[in-house]
Image (cartoon, rainbow, N blue to C red; front, top):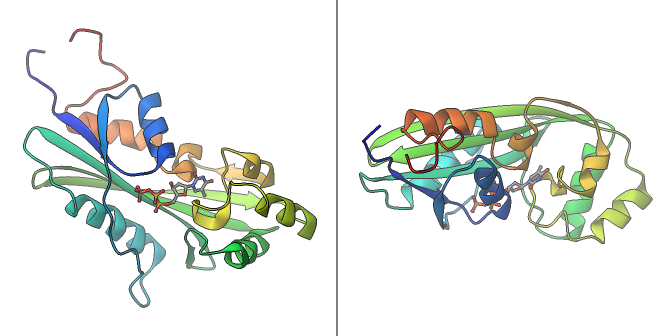
Length: 198
Ligand SMILES: Cc1cn([C@H]2C[C@H](O)[C@@H](COP(=O)(O)OP(=O)(O)OP(=O)(O)O)O2)c(=O)[nH]c1=O
């Protein structure tokens, strides 16, 4: 095709999202948006992540030749969002609550080219085995829990907490790869299929 693809910009400070987008074979630059991530009273977690992905997008400029990708991930237990832990006690409380139970992980992805916006919401169901007090204590001594929703990293040692998973693993890490590839293609960005020089 002779037409030029728009430039992709990842609007995220998350190194995991950058890595997943790289794995898709996409060329992109990175910018990050700093927004107020406070939930609205009684806001459902699935509405919250979608609003966050959209507001991250609105906080950044996107010209006609630019496609901006933003996302937000949250862990949901008993209809409540577990975001990043504020401190040690918060992370401990989250891991104790997740122990031996199933939870959901939602990631909303938003792609925007000027005023044209497309978004997806992806849900993954994750079941944890029992986490002993000792295991939680040892895990809190690692650097994994701190900037992760729900205080664990499925891509790291936290992967050993998972008994069962139903859905996309990359969605839990912060960017659902299949749905992101499909969205990119709707904006004429076809990273995986692109031949060198085309
Ligand atoms: C549950 C889980 C979350 N996470 C990460 C994904 C997200 O980066 C983070 C949730 O925080 P987010 O607020 O979604 O993203 P972020 O603050 O890291 O980046 P930005 O807002 O700039 O886009 O938790 C993992 O890496 N592994 C996991 O297993």
